[in-house]
Length: 219
Image (cartoon, rainbow, N blue to C red; front, side):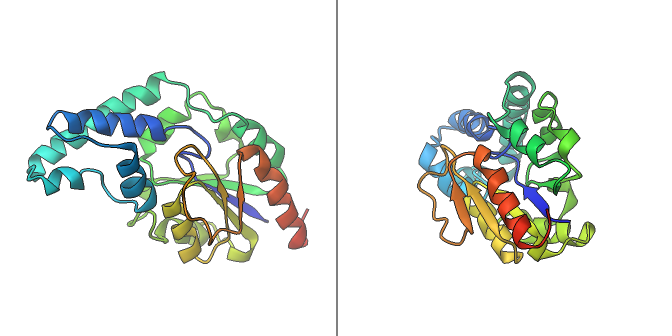
């Protein structure tokens, strides 16, 4: 069966802004500013820790551990209280349900994923979810997608990844998978030349998926 491998943050749920604000607020406590451009470059493009900025200023490893814990508490509270489902996400998954397999491959923690989706209702459409705890290396390393292929006996030619970031695209391509990009407010200036397509909204994804399914001789 053809399978869609969804990224989570920025594709299904609008959480990037909360993560940025939570990290920005704790870095400010040690005199460091975090700009939107830095967040995009370090986190969304390179997939690296934003706390490298603190390390570069001589902040100790123990202090950084404390800052990370503080950031996670703030972010967790955002996820617990703020609605984050991206408009049209539920309809997109609903329209594909029963026609293709669907799973989520995300670099977010399992507890954060659960909080973000506590009220989205998307779980009923998903066959599986892989989170940070399920593999050794995070995006842009291909390990998350290779894990999905291996664990669920998926054929790369019968899969389509849906991502919104350059690090996600890099992970998919390195795993030998086609990747469709959904633009977001955080990825407008990204280099998506390796993507098989770019759409402006998740509402455009079902048509792209079904076109590919037809090309494989499926639905």
